[in-house]
Length: 127
Length: 188
Image (tube, rainbow over the protein chains, first blue to last red):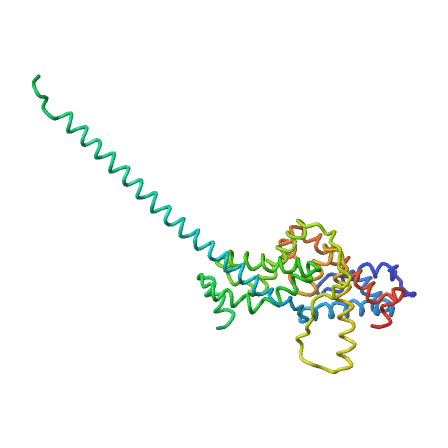
């Protein structure tokens, strides 16, 4: 670290390492050169690698839920599925009811019109 | 039935297939929820809400990503919404031992396993101690390997903000685990 031509300090590198440890993350050439020649920064980089490796293994460490938790979730799910099924049924029936009522209304209107027309055409009795 | 077949059946409205998917993925989803929320009660609620959302959205799941990744994204979004809604002033019970942690990796060298186990326990504790915003990012990126773009989208923040939080989180974890002044590094 002490013999650097370019003035890169370990403190500066320490700020960059949490980002630089990612594969493919661009790193300034001067920083790269410093790390290659500085044992302190190499050790620091190794710590970050160790940290990331340990973090990745956390994925395989399952946290077991309390007994009955899965059953509660399945029950909530079944309830939601039933609600959805009922809603879907009601929505479908609503359409059928509206169609039937509309059809009946049209038929009643047509019948009323026919009756009115028939009355108008019927001969009047002489009074 | 393979998971792909179960997903296909669930997309066609097969409730039993979806419930089987729930059984298969439950422990992993709960683990993520617990790591994101930091407590069992919230984790339970997040998991339940996650599966309800997943069931509603399963027809839109195109299969571009793995089902588990899709589920992780819903879990992250649900957890983020929930933690925003809830007060964080929950007092922890002193006698609360926390949930049981099970390592499902194959058994390896006992000494190495013991050392690794100690590190993992301290790391788990350190992650749990992080502020929620930092914890969420480091769990999603460094533990579950979700891309920055997906994390930013689910949390409603920019990619740049996600990266800044990630680097802060890593720095804090590094300090806790390896800083000799903290007295923890000696055991590493």
